[in-house]
Image 1 (cartoon, one colour):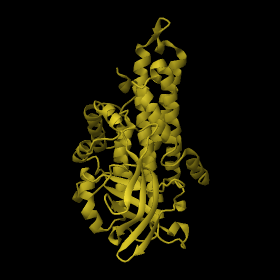
Image 2 (cartoon, one colour):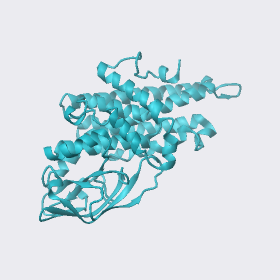
Image 3 (cartoon, rainbow, N blue to C red):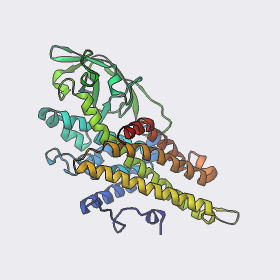
Image 4 (cartoon, rainbow, N blue to C red):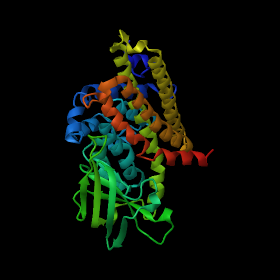
Length: 394
């Protein structure tokens, strides 16, 4: 039995979850096959290049991964949040989280602003290419001095005839270098209440006054391009306003729930893969005349981590199910983000330790995975912010 089988992976023939239908499980199998055949053999080259090739993203579009919850008229599959969780978890299992976040930002954190708030004309113009992976999206909310504090953003947009003029900077923007379509948050009314002062705009690559300030050199997620964006008198057609003036704050806060669920699912995929790699290692690596697996302390530590990860997965699934059922899952989603973000780092620490010296070598997968996991407790809502959201609801 392989480590993956002993860990209870949910592929064909494995244990089934009450949350998922046969269609969900078929999607899981499809994504897993794609990861094994088209991601893992090439991921190291993408890490070196600092980006995922556009051809790979278009391939994902062709397979339907970028349209899971979008309507058939745009090429989508019309599935649900549980399907998105499956995609995120399986991409996380790839061991290349920079690749995973590149795809997930496009399909579940950025393009959702276009679909949810865009006019029919905006959706008709962009959604087919978004779903096909031909137009890659980024979401630009975070700034040097404002992350989860959306009300604190300083980028401004002033109306000038049939255009808005944007000025400001965005930071840590995934897909920032190679994206095509940016969903940008800016303040349109400084005198309004903070929650009614933010609007969202579609900014297209090449618009005058918009440029990439710099590509950022990161600790992890090396194959995900991340950038600082600069807006200097950037003229954006008024028709590119998403959902009307002053509606951006609530759109952003609403999508945080989806974003955090997806990130939690991705983290649990990463944690599963790390445990599986470590199980394979400790069962074959000998020390003092016996495999490491014969050491009770190692067996029990990995067993407890496996139990925690299984609990994390079920928490993610439950939060996604609540969303499918139409319930407010803010408390559960905040728990997901806090718990899974911390747990994946706990898992990586132990797995690096059990790999010994090789766990510290750049040539090992677990070293890369540990670097990638660190941001899970930061990006998309830091653990401390998430725990405060939970505390408000206790």
